Length: 304
Image 1 (cartoon, rainbow, N blue to C red):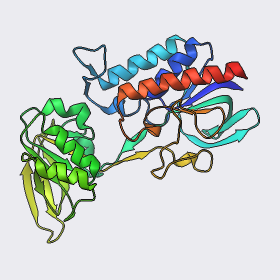
Image 2 (image 1 turned 30 degrees about the vertical axis):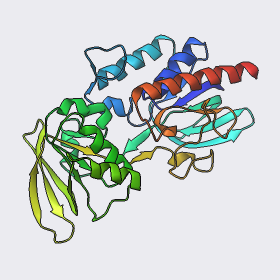
Image 3 (image 1 turned 60 degrees about the horizontal axis):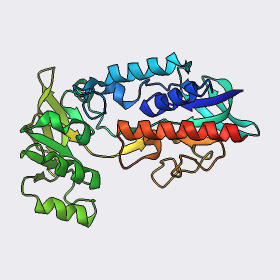
Image 4 (image 1 turned 135 degrees about the horizontal axis):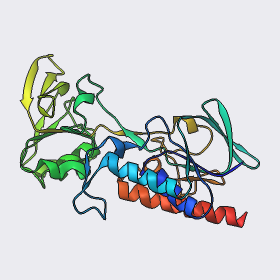
């Protein structure tokens, strides 16, 4: 019987592990199929305190893992197939093996929706981003496209205007699905141009970074090229909670429901990071909730 099992090896899960390990709870992390979470696939991280010159995402996550290991955190590579409540705590099936734990911290994150084009993987982090807050500063005075038609796309486009006056919002439909207030804000902004009924069918570049995209007209199927230095996808995120349905309460968007102390609907099960945060989705906020979940877990075990 493990004291603490943490699902997820992103910044939230590793922060939870550091705190739990320092409290002598000997945490076990189930890393998932993509170790390190979203930060492991990003380039430079400039907005995490303590790194005035910035730090590369993979390097940052490798250091977080070393720090967790230093205090005794153990790791299992693999994905959780099933979770269920038992009298003593929870039971998990991982790699067809059974693991029992008194406390479970869920830090599985959320994955950005991508267009899944053949050329997309090649240029992720090389001109393609899913987070303007993270990467906008790299595109000062450059030409960027924001893809989407909801509130997230409006927010990304408006945020980009702080860095460049060359922002185009590309939407595959003829009307936005965003809230009225966001649409009004967009209309008042004279910098943002709108391309209606267009969708990206290919990213173009020199192998190192993109310099244009191919756009298809969704009405007449005509193709045109649009020069740009960067593309920001704002077509939503998907929380990694499919394996949790029926075990713990999820909201209408399938994010994990948690109170302000990171408690879920199941006793002894806590949440951390983007899996319960559809609003901020930042490394610093994920780390904060990882700390909270671990401290609540320690308190829960102490009271038991």
